[in-house]
Image (cartoon, rainbow, N blue to C red):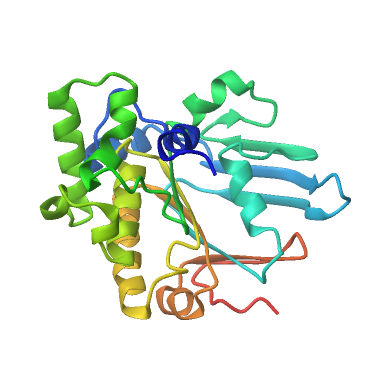
Length: 265
């Protein structure tokens, strides 16, 4: 296991900070208004692992600006592989992936951090720095890029207010509930005004009531223009919200339905 600080630096490429924005919904909407392309497009994407497992099999999909997409399917269907490709943690064996108007399929590694500046990532395992306060966890990436103390304070405060945790900014992750820790992760993800928020089982470790609160937060973020792609096994939330549902089974899209339900059989 990497030391705490080194591990964060490793993960920081997934939470790259935009040098010019704190979380400001107006800025997101202004950027979205200028966005005329598809937000995400997969063209005949296949992913075959070295052991021969075909995680994704010739899938094509378009996600529009402002969409809220639930990605559902059984374990091993390819959902996590799908998400990792969107932020270039993995690459396709065949096909093309376009994110925010950029073909990321053959993007040089040196350009990947710049891609991720328009992305927010929220994972099931919180990946918070236990020895850092809530505010320090959200601010760490800003310190890495050399933002001023005043800028850090303003940007962190705005993000924490957005997730309802500004009153706990001086607490440590171990002093928070699971739902509160997930809110810190969301604050860290939205501090860069992402056009796209990618989430993998964000309610997987939370009880039903807290899961609903976290989902309401995602809905509020989406209502301000951020495109959200969420992999989940939470039948109840998917069926209740009736958003766009994309179902993967054996690496293939078997359903793409607006106002859909969880069912994928």
